[in-house]
Length: 114
Image (cartoon, rainbow, N blue to C red; front, side, top):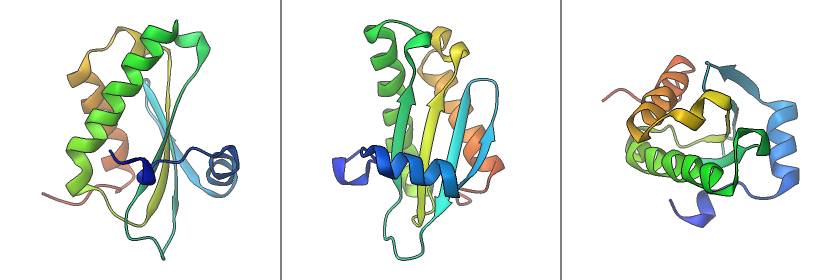
């Protein structure tokens, strides 16, 4: 995923937390906010230190980025989304992470139909 489509600034994260909606399952929490003037969705990833060492956290972020890249064509373009990984993601492989991400995004209708 291109860097211009990422949320990196702490102020942007806090704005989505404060003004957006949230949804969660056992593995992931998403906060999302609609921005009408946006032509492409933006995503911020957060994996806390409680989940594991740097290698584990980076692996989870890599899985999430790749999953989002594969779902890019199905994502609704006018949203800012923050994805927070929970403890169970530590033991998950790529396909399980992707399945969990699809679950939370589709429950909140952030994915378009195929």
